Amino acid sequence: MHFHESREHRALRTALRGLEKQFNGFGTAQFDYSGLQTHMVKVLSMDLDEPNNMPKFFTACLASLLLDPDQKYDQKKRSAYLEFNSTSEIHRRPIDCARNTIAYLASYVLSNEIGTETETYATSWFNISLGDRPFENLDEYSYPEFGVTKAIEVKDRSYPHVKAMIYNNLDGTDGQLLRGEIIMVLRIIHAQARRARLLEHTIIPVLLFSFMGPQHARIIEAYFDGSSLVMRPTQLFDLRNKDQALIKSFGQWWLGGLTGQTKVPVHLRS
Image (cartoon, rainbow, N blue to C red; front, top):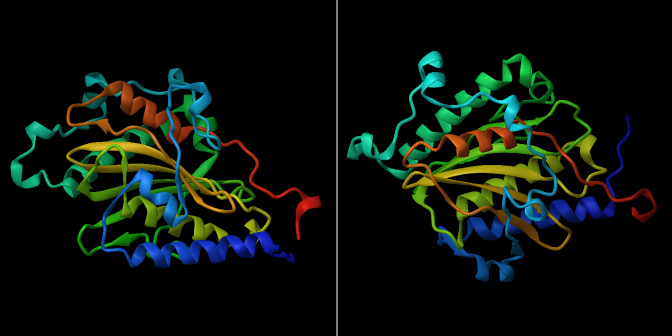
């Protein structure tokens, strides 16, 4: 099958390369929301509980479909949530706490994926093979380290949406984005933009589950809108103590669906 790349799609790939080169050159690891506009990054708010301010390209599955990550669940699955104060000080680096929390969430979503109640949602997504083309270089090993540990895409490969879990070896602050969050989003979007089957799409939405220190996390919806990289972070959530409702909410968004228009209408293509 022949795929034609539109002018809009070429412009998308050019902009992504330029942005990644720019942020790779910065020595700064954290950026105030207010200062990012000058670097073609637009930060907009997002609230998972506010209907008018939820993700624009992703939907959550019903909470009633998911297991409760309570003590009974932990005992049955032989799973343990590592709380911050119960962890020895030498293992409280941001990267350690981030990876520990990701490990628990990844196990939790897997437990739901293999349950009959969530089969509809689990069969909509499949794992991306990290390290294989075009998903190379989704990690950084020089301080402060960051990287993708898990990513999924739509089984129907005609959609560009991606979800990913990432760790950051820094403490997070509301009002600031981490360089690792921006770089990972740019690389994921660019990887999808290189795929011939997605050339009709000029918006490639990413739902980033970002984990950092001390033991915090947020969800960021990201996409390039034609002029800027849009980053829509939630507030930072404190996971130093196990928060069952929050873990379940993250599970709803990981196992949920997709929505939104990502293609340029045919009559507007060039």
